[in-house]
Length: 496
Ligand code: NAD
Image 1: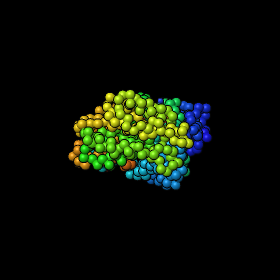
Image 2: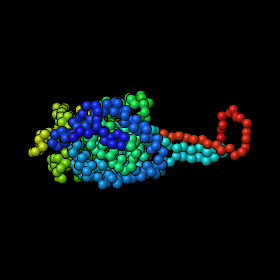
Image 3: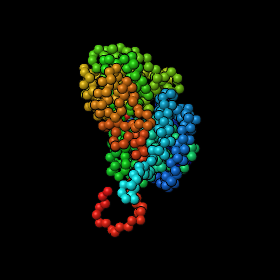
Image 4: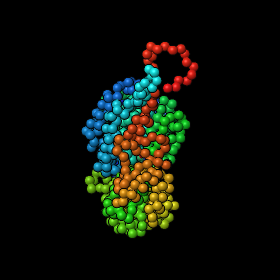
C-alpha cells in the first residue's frame, strides 16, 4: 500500500517518485510505503492553506470549537481502528496506543475552550474618552513537524490549538509512522473542517527544509531529537519565523532512602520499559541514595525486569513491543555493548532476545545496568530503548547534581516520604517537568509541556494556554471617541 498526502481536504498521491518504507516492527516486514514530498508539493499545500485560512479565521471561535468537539466524538468512535494502525507501525502495545490517542484527545478537549482562551484584555478610560484593548489574532499558515514515537498525541498537541485559534496548518509527521496522522486529518475533515485548513505532507529533510524556507509559513512547532530540534530552531528563526522545538531527554529518578521501594521498583518498570523506552519522558536513569537503598532496590528490580513480557501488540499479555526500526535496534544494542566496554555492570541482559515466529522483528529484551558513571556514553546519550541505568549516589546533594548537570532537562522524578526533601528538590532542580512520587510527570492538557536546557528551544511550551499564545499574535488597540470637547493640536507626547 502506498500512502500519499492529505491536501485541500482530500488524500492525494505523491508526485516525487521517492518513497520511504513503513515497517511492521514486530514482523520486520515492509507493509506500506510513504511518499516523500518535494518542495513543490509542500508549496502546493501552503497555497491551499493560504487560500483557506482567512475564511476560517472569520468563522466565530464557538463554531471553530464545535468542529474540535465533533473531532473528539469521532476519535472515540474510531479509537480501536486508530490504535490498531498506530501499534502496527510503531510497535507499542494496543492499550498504550490508546493512551497515545487519549493524551492527544485531551488537548483537543482543552481547545474546545478556544472562545475563552482567545479573549483579550480591556481597560476602560485610560485617558479622556480613551479605552485600550487587546485581541489575539491567528498568525496565518503554521506548521508542525513531529516524531515517530507519539504519532497521534503530538500531531494533536500541535494542530488542535493552532486550528482552534483560526490558523491553517501544515503537518509533516514522521515518515516512520505516517498512517495515523493521515487518519486524524480525515477525521477533522469529517468533523466539519473546511478544505485546506489541515494539510498533511509526508516527507523527509526535503519537505522539512521547504517548510523552513517557505515565506508564507509564519510559525513552526517541532518535536524530535535534539540535533534536529536545534537545526530547525536555528534555520526557522533565521527565516523570521516563530519557532518552538522540543528535543531529546535523559530523565532521572532520584530515590531517597525513606522511599517505598516496592512502589519505586514498580514505577521504574513502567517508566523505564513502557513503550520499549521510546518515550521522551521515559525514566532512563535511577539514582538511589546510599548503598543500602541501591542494594534493596536492585533486589526488587531484577526479578521484575526478568519477568517482563516482550512481544507483538497483537498479544494481550505483552508489556512492551519492538523498537521502531532495524536501525533503532542496532543503535540500542551498540550502546549496550559500549556500556559493558566502559565498565558498567549489565545485571539483566536482553540483547539475545528472540521470539518464535517473530525472528525478524526489531525486538530488544529489557536491559538493566548497575554502576553506571556520569562520564559513560550510556549515561550521556539518550538511548531510547528498553535500557535502565543505575547511577549510585552517596548523598542527596550528589543525586541532585546529576540531573542538574546533564545536558537534557525534560523530566525528572523524586521518590521519598519526606515533604521537605521533595519540596527542596522540586524547587532547585533545573528540569522542566518534575514528579514527586510520580515517575512520568507529563502535565495535563490545561497545564503546559516543555523541557529545559537542550530538551527545549524557544520560549513557549506545548499545549495549555501557551499554545494559544504561540499560535496567535497580540494586537493592542487604543481607541478614542471624543466626547465633544474639541481642543487644538497637541505637540507634546500624551501623558495620562
Ligand atoms: P527525529 O529527530 O529523527 O525526527 C523528528 C522529525 O524530524 C521527523 O518528522 C523527521 O522526518 C524529521 N527529520 C529527521 N531528520 C531530519 C533532518 N536531517 N532534517 C530535517 N528534518 C529531519 O526524531 P524521532 O526519532 O522521530 O523521535 C524521537 C526523538 O524525539 C527522541 O529524541 C525523543 O526524546 C524526542 N521527543 C521529544 C519530545 C518532547 O516533547 N521533548 C516528545 C517526543 C519525542
